[in-house]
Every structure is written in structure tokens, then in C-alpha cells.
Length: 396
Image (cartoon, rainbow, N blue to C red):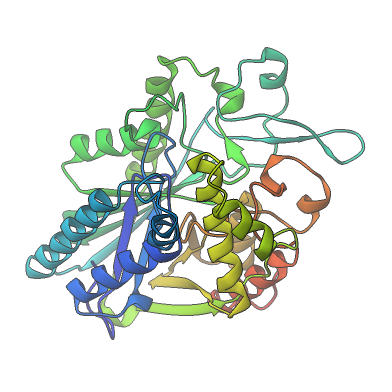
């Protein structure tokens, strides 16, 4: 909770795989109600751990109409989590502490992130290096385009640290699909740093859609702690390098751009409705059909996606939807090299993967029909919004 601006601001990170459509809307609305603000001042993100729940109340409604409600996720549990999160917001407002200084620090995370999309000589995706990669030849391939920097923002009352926000871009899986909930290595790193410092840590996954630990991870269970320690080292480095700056409410800002993303041409309403209503299908295909259908209908009625930008003195934090490619995060930093720019992705999960325009012609899983629900023109839309929010003179 950040108070002191025109309206209270709520920043929320959840150890779930994704919160989309109605799930994202309800989450924001209820947290806003608890904070005494509006949904436009609430940013809800997931860290995208694969051994974790998902949430989309719009999908649940469609599936319930087909007699298979509760197959995609547990809606009772999800609503209970939202209620408890809202209670936490109410409690936070009552215990608000004055902030006198802002801390900014950057650490480098070694041997965790690597690009998943390995191109061949023809410029097409030759192999996808998933987050757990058992092929030693694929792991030996170059790291590729990543952002090794972990950004840390801390709030202080004079010399007393109050809270820490961290941002790092990678798929957060070591080994997964075990059927047991687990925060995986970014959650372990966050928890260990919170224990070490005694300061609440809130961690956000950056633009890690095409980034994973595959070069450094063969999927062995013991590697989870190794990856967690490496991320924790980056967090500690950012903490140790923190520079504090006086801050007042005059240095606080919150701007929101609502954009309509171009919908993928392969989404067909009639086909999706057929799959949804096909009782011979297993629940999962019908769930994904419902998810795509809801997104298609949203785009058709220009139901925009909010992109907030938080200003804290010389720091800017962009809040983006979907499984965003790391190029967007790097572009944001290039737009404002004079600022401390961080990014949280995995907001509204409905668009799925969001690639760059060129990536859609390169092939690969991330821009496939199953994975991405937006069209290549999405790059121009998002970069334009980011440039305006960052007040950049030019955008790439």
C-alpha cells in the first residue's frame, strides 16, 4: 500500500501461475474497495510458478454453464484468497508508516536466466530451450538476450527499512508439474531475503516470457535451491548497493494508459464455442477454449488492458500484462536511461505470451496459436503506451 498521492495505490504479487479476465478484475476491484481507492490504482501480478493455482472467474462462469464448473481451478479457494488479501490491505492502511527516504539498488543475477528461443541460420526458431532442459547440447548454446539485472526499491523511515520491492525477469520454474503447490526458486529467494533482513519483501516477475533457467537447469530437484541462492545473491547485492534519497508525496505519481491489444487472427468465435460445448472433450481443452473466447470478446468490444506506471522520485515502474518478452523491458530502460526503470509483467494473464513483432514470423512455441492470443501489431501498441507513460522523447 502506498498512500500520499491523490488516491491510495495497491501493489499485489501472487504466487500463482496466472490471474486473467474476471479473476483479474475481481481481484483489483476488491483490493481497491478495501483500500478506499479505485481499481485503476491497483496492480495485481503473478509470479507464474507452474505448481500453483490459476484464476479466471469469467472462464469458471462459462464452464459452470456447461456443467463442469470447478474443473479449471477452485473458485471458493480463490475468493477466499481475495478476501484475505483485502483484509491485509485494510490492516495495512491502519498501520501505515511515514516514508522519508527511497532506496534504489541493482544487482546482477548470475547463471539463472537464458533465452528460450534459439534461432537457426535462417532466422527461425531452431529449438526452444524450456525452463528445465535435459539436453546438454541445448544447454550449451549461448545465453541469448536476457536482462541480468535485478532491480530493488526500498522504503525507509529515516534509517529504518519498511518494505522492499524486487523485480527480475525469468520463468520461475526449476522442476514442476508435481501436483503440489510451491513458490519455486524466486519465492524461496524472496523468503530467504525477508528472513535475513527482517523487512517485508514483495517480488515481481519482470518481462520473462521468452526467458527461463534452461541453460543452467536440467530439472533436477536439488537445482531448485541452487537457483534460489543465485537469485538471493542478486537481491543481496542490490540491497547492499542501495542508495537512499529523500522523498515526499510530491515525488509520488501514478499514471494509467488503457490500451486495446490487437487480437490474434487465429481466434475464431464459432470454433471456440464448439470446443467449449463439446462434452466429449476433456475439461482442459474446454477451459482453454473458454479463456480464448473471453479474450476475443473483450477485444471485440474494446475492453482495454490497463498499463499503470508508478513514479517514485527518479524511479519508474511499469506494470504490463501477459507473458511479455524481455525485449519490452530492455526497451523501457533504453527509453529513459536517466531513470531507474523497473518492470512487472504477468498482470492480466488473458493475452498469453506477448512477443515482439518480428518474433511472430520466427516460429517457436511462445508465438504459436496455443500460446499467444495477440497479433504482431501488439509491439507498436505497447511501445507507444510505454513511451508515453515514461515521457520518453522517442520509442523503439
